[in-house]
View 1 (cartoon, rainbow, N blue to C red):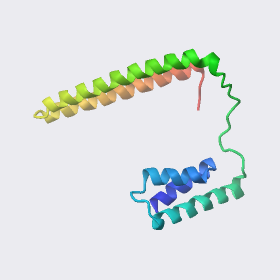
View 2 (view 1 turned 180 degrees about the vertical axis):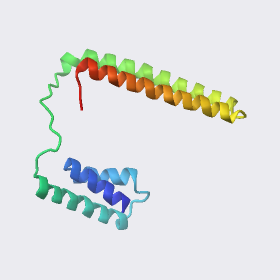
View 3 (view 1 turned 120 degrees about the vertical axis):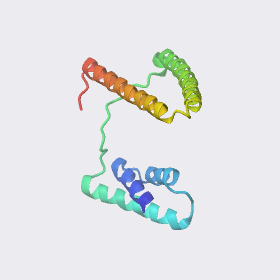
Length: 142
Protein backbone atom coordinates (compact mmCIF):
# COMPACT_ATOMS: atom_id res chain seq x y z
CA UNK A 1 0.00 0.00 0.00
CA UNK A 2 2.81 2.41 0.83
CA UNK A 3 4.55 1.72 -2.46
CA UNK A 4 1.30 2.20 -4.36
CA UNK A 5 0.68 5.56 -2.70
CA UNK A 6 4.22 6.82 -3.24
CA UNK A 7 4.33 5.63 -6.84
CA UNK A 8 0.91 7.10 -7.57
CA UNK A 9 1.93 10.42 -6.03
CA UNK A 10 5.07 10.55 -8.13
CA UNK A 11 3.17 9.53 -11.25
CA UNK A 12 0.47 12.15 -10.73
CA UNK A 13 2.85 14.95 -9.79
CA UNK A 14 5.15 14.61 -12.77
CA UNK A 15 2.72 12.96 -15.22
CA UNK A 16 5.07 9.97 -15.53
CA UNK A 17 3.47 6.66 -14.58
CA UNK A 18 6.48 4.55 -15.51
CA UNK A 19 8.78 6.69 -13.35
CA UNK A 20 6.34 6.28 -10.46
CA UNK A 21 6.44 2.51 -10.83
CA UNK A 22 10.22 2.43 -11.06
CA UNK A 23 10.61 4.72 -8.04
CA UNK A 24 8.36 2.58 -5.89
CA UNK A 25 10.04 -0.65 -6.98
CA UNK A 26 13.51 0.77 -6.38
CA UNK A 27 12.90 2.43 -3.03
CA UNK A 28 9.99 0.74 -1.32
CA UNK A 29 9.43 -2.78 -2.55
CA UNK A 30 11.59 -5.44 -1.03
CA UNK A 31 10.52 -8.05 -3.54
CA UNK A 32 9.55 -8.00 -7.19
CA UNK A 33 6.50 -10.20 -7.47
CA UNK A 34 3.28 -9.97 -9.43
CA UNK A 35 1.21 -9.56 -6.27
CA UNK A 36 2.98 -6.28 -5.50
CA UNK A 37 3.79 -5.14 -9.04
CA UNK A 38 0.28 -5.30 -10.53
CA UNK A 39 -1.39 -3.08 -7.87
CA UNK A 40 1.49 -0.65 -8.19
CA UNK A 41 1.04 -0.34 -11.96
CA UNK A 42 -2.71 0.07 -11.56
CA UNK A 43 -2.28 2.77 -8.89
CA UNK A 44 0.19 4.74 -10.99
CA UNK A 45 -1.97 4.46 -14.10
CA UNK A 46 -5.12 5.57 -12.28
CA UNK A 47 -3.30 8.45 -10.60
CA UNK A 48 -1.95 9.69 -13.92
CA UNK A 49 -5.38 9.37 -15.54
CA UNK A 50 -7.10 11.27 -12.72
CA UNK A 51 -4.47 13.99 -12.92
CA UNK A 52 -5.02 14.29 -16.67
CA UNK A 53 -8.77 14.66 -16.17
CA UNK A 54 -8.49 17.19 -13.33
CA UNK A 55 -5.46 19.23 -14.39
CA UNK A 56 -4.94 18.47 -18.06
CA UNK A 57 -1.89 17.19 -19.88
CA UNK A 58 0.34 20.23 -19.38
CA UNK A 59 3.45 20.07 -17.25
CA UNK A 60 3.05 21.03 -13.63
CA UNK A 61 6.49 22.61 -13.53
CA UNK A 62 7.49 24.87 -16.38
CA UNK A 63 11.04 25.37 -17.52
CA UNK A 64 12.48 27.95 -19.84
CA UNK A 65 14.52 27.23 -22.92
CA UNK A 66 17.90 25.75 -22.13
CA UNK A 67 20.87 26.17 -24.43
CA UNK A 68 23.00 23.05 -24.33
CA UNK A 69 26.01 24.51 -26.13
CA UNK A 70 28.42 21.72 -25.23
CA UNK A 71 31.55 23.18 -26.77
CA UNK A 72 31.11 26.52 -25.05
CA UNK A 73 30.46 25.01 -21.63
CA UNK A 74 32.90 22.09 -21.80
CA UNK A 75 35.78 23.80 -19.94
CA UNK A 76 33.41 24.77 -17.15
CA UNK A 77 32.06 21.22 -16.92
CA UNK A 78 35.59 19.84 -16.78
CA UNK A 79 36.48 22.28 -14.01
CA UNK A 80 33.29 21.41 -12.15
CA UNK A 81 34.14 17.71 -12.44
CA UNK A 82 37.64 18.20 -11.04
CA UNK A 83 36.37 20.36 -8.17
CA UNK A 84 33.62 17.84 -7.39
CA UNK A 85 36.10 14.96 -7.42
CA UNK A 86 38.48 16.75 -5.05
CA UNK A 87 35.57 17.68 -2.79
CA UNK A 88 34.36 14.05 -2.76
CA UNK A 89 37.82 12.77 -1.82
CA UNK A 90 38.10 15.38 0.94
CA UNK A 91 34.63 14.58 2.25
CA UNK A 92 35.35 10.85 2.31
CA UNK A 93 38.63 11.36 4.18
CA UNK A 94 36.90 13.69 6.64
CA UNK A 95 34.13 11.16 7.19
CA UNK A 96 36.59 8.35 7.93
CA UNK A 97 38.59 10.62 10.27
CA UNK A 98 35.44 11.61 12.21
CA UNK A 99 34.36 7.97 12.47
CA UNK A 100 37.79 7.03 13.85
CA UNK A 101 37.61 9.85 16.40
CA UNK A 102 34.19 8.72 17.57
CA UNK A 103 35.38 5.11 17.80
CA UNK A 104 38.22 6.23 20.07
CA UNK A 105 35.86 8.28 22.25
CA UNK A 106 33.21 5.56 22.53
CA UNK A 107 33.89 5.14 26.26
CA UNK A 108 32.93 8.79 26.77
CA UNK A 109 29.44 8.57 25.30
CA UNK A 110 28.07 11.94 26.58
CA UNK A 111 31.09 13.85 25.26
CA UNK A 112 30.89 12.14 21.87
CA UNK A 113 27.14 12.88 21.68
CA UNK A 114 27.71 16.53 22.53
CA UNK A 115 30.43 16.86 19.89
CA UNK A 116 28.18 15.21 17.30
CA UNK A 117 25.30 17.54 18.16
CA UNK A 118 27.61 20.56 17.95
CA UNK A 119 28.89 19.43 14.55
CA UNK A 120 25.35 18.91 13.24
CA UNK A 121 24.19 22.29 14.54
CA UNK A 122 27.19 24.10 13.07
CA UNK A 123 26.73 22.45 9.66
CA UNK A 124 23.04 23.43 9.75
CA UNK A 125 24.01 27.01 10.60
CA UNK A 126 26.57 27.07 7.79
CA UNK A 127 24.06 25.75 5.23
CA UNK A 128 21.45 28.30 6.28
CA UNK A 129 24.01 31.10 6.11
CA UNK A 130 25.05 30.03 2.60
CA UNK A 131 21.41 29.85 1.54
CA UNK A 132 20.71 33.32 2.95
CA UNK A 133 23.76 34.73 1.18
CA UNK A 134 22.77 33.13 -2.13
CA UNK A 135 19.17 34.35 -1.93
CA UNK A 136 20.23 37.93 -1.21
CA UNK A 137 23.07 37.87 -3.74
CA UNK A 138 21.14 36.39 -6.65
CA UNK A 139 17.65 37.64 -5.78
CA UNK A 140 15.96 34.26 -5.42
CA UNK A 141 12.73 34.17 -3.45
CA UNK A 142 10.24 31.40 -2.88
